[in-house]
Image (cartoon, rainbow, N blue to C red; front, side, top):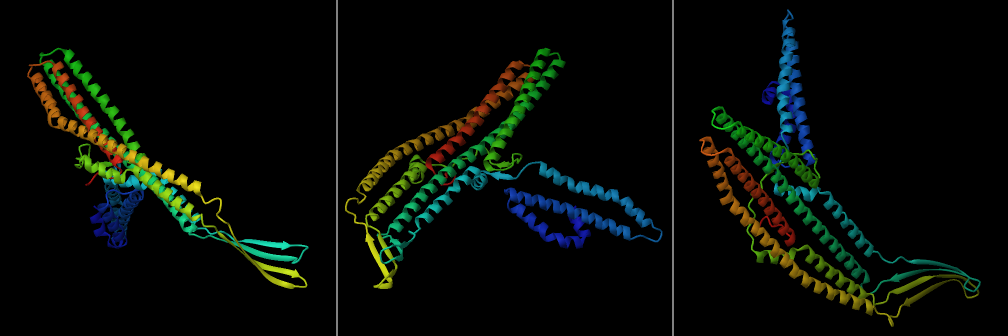
Amino acid sequence: MLAVMRASCPHVLRRDASATAAETAALRDNPVTSVTDRESAKKGTRRDARFVVRCLVCRFQRQSYANPADGRGGDRAVKALPSFLLILLVTAAPTGGQESQGGARLTLQAALDLADKQNLDLAAARQRRFVSRAGVQIAKERPNPTFGFTALRDTPHEGWFFDQPLELGGKRGHRINVAQQEGGVTDVEISTVARQVRRSAREAFYRLAFARAESERLAQVVKLAERLKQIAQQRFEAGAVPQLEVVQAEVEVSRAQADLEVAGQEEKVALSQFNALLNEPAANAWKLAGGLEDPPPAWSVEELVQRAYRANAELQHLAQEEKVEESRRGLLKAERIPNLDLQYGLDFNSPPDFRVGPRGQLSLTLPIFSRNQGEIAQSLASQRVLEAETTARKRAVAGMVEEAYFDWNAQQTQAGIYRQTLVPAVRKLEGMAEESYRAGKATILVVLDAQRNVQDVERTYQQGLLALQSAFASLEEAVGAPLDQK
């Protein structure tokens, strides 16, 4: 339709072609967009609608101006107006329908990236980095000079001077190093929050996938119940079964429909939680690319333990605290070297010796009684405590990773057994029971029992897949590094 409009209105085409083509290419190349990008897409859609309106007005005006002498051209233009309005409605209708059908396609990696960019908790944690940078700026400051003025009855009667402390022994450099290492602790804490947000985003993604899978499963249950009701009704009309079996089938249909409605509400809850985590509008309905059966990568427990030694958040925090303590000890040793106070100025009005004369003074604190012995000893003791905590924490991290790995492995085994054995078996049993009931060789209770077995096994299987993804998220957080790819 737009192609026809553009062909008939070339002067409008020249104004809108570049903007429309650019927006179409951007939407095609980047299906997962942020809030700003989606707003731009909506503006592009509105621009297309305005383009269609201008084309219709252009065609209507051309027919109005092309009037023959008898004036019948104007009548034809008026009669053509309803057709133009109908074309406008038909052209605009798919746009509204497309917007109402759902949101953009979203992969797990895109969801993790979106959470990393837009999550409010993580954004607030990253603001602390500016506090640590301000601490470095504070550490770079130099001592201010002191100005003094004297007025005495003795000679010299007046005078002024400047007192400038000079830091010796590299104190400023050590102070900056301490502030930078403390900023490293802040970075580790921010990384910890980022890993927690990553885990929450992964779990929320698969909770939404689980809720939608449950809705699809229960929709199939409703279809099976309705089919069983039809079979029971046919057999009742044939006089093969009592009406009680029809009532039982109707009860099962009502129960399945109620479960489906509840699942729909739970899906809305999962979607709302997911959008809150991503800082997206609550009504944004994502089309998830992927599901609960996404295969995780293969890892060995030894690889995961070694990777956790390098990336675990608690071990990184302890290692950074050791660096902070070491830098503080360097500052304490530098403070053993005393600062030099330099004074210089002028004296006035000291008759008969002079009217104006320079003055100067050097002062130095002698490090005789205090050389930061206690502070340095305390720093060494804190260093030993951190080393002991690191050793203990390494063992605890190894145990935590091993526990998470074996839990993940157990969930994989359970999901594999259900997928390969139990789910096909109960579905086959349900089909055989339905055929037996249709042939009059079994009662409706046998079919209902088989259908409930299918529901229980499929529900357990879906819950097992969700537990599998949750176990993988726990394992990833315990290791402290992404595990999607080796």
